Image (cartoon, rainbow, N blue to C red; front, side):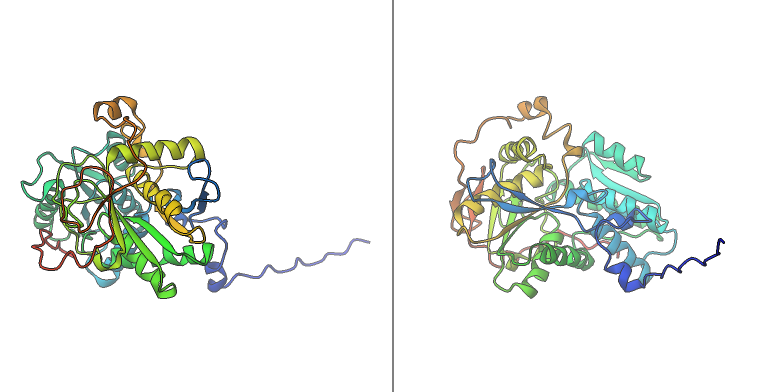
Length: 381
């Protein structure tokens, strides 16, 4: 005789259980796919025997590392009332934050205008438009502040024309820094002990956010900043740069100069060589920032004690660099395929000792920002 048996009820997970779910849990929204990015050991053949470093692969976020601050800054602006429902988001970016803001616009229901310049890769322009963002391109650099200042002035003009618009101002917004605490927590959960953190520096957001939070748990952490040749962030004069995503012709307020134990300036030829080597040896790479950061992380892995654990943050993947880093014609035209003459950085005692033109290291950073004239004007927030 067949008996009808009531099915066993399936318990509904509590909010705390949802938060504790593993990274493999399926997500119901695009924003839910941000975070919990993997780490990868980068060793031989790029590094020597028993040498290497851990890479945090932020390219596994939908748009890259800046998905984190884009969502966080917009959510905080909505909570505070600075961004009204349906209000337009306007921001200056070289690319990755634009993708994050496009994601935030879709998530929270806001139109997005991204202000960039003629140096943005055509692929990135098309990606931004495909994801619903309007792209406003400035065609003339500012005589003193370069492309970044020209973009910021265009943002200000757009804000003046639309009183309901909001700019998160990634250069000075403290929420850009706070957004990266979760990344620091992920690293601790994944790796435990971390001795040296290597991070690229552009707006200053992820280096300050991750570095400060890690030092709360790891007070002896060394933080190494990676800048671009031609950038003015760490006391060098601003000059022409082709690398995007790191470096700046202005000094963003979010850069925490006192956080860094040393800084390296990396040239584009070195970054290209490293990015391509990583791709062919580890199936793991990215663009200018990844090439520069990995260059420095490898050197540290070889020169610091073998027991130290070096961690590098890779901000994105290789996809957007199809026309630049991974394009032989582009690289050849810019003289980027020549083999560097040395695998060691040059050394300077202070950031202002001389103008650097190739990979260079300085172990004395200090409070470079003291007494400077800040060319950054705070946007409407």
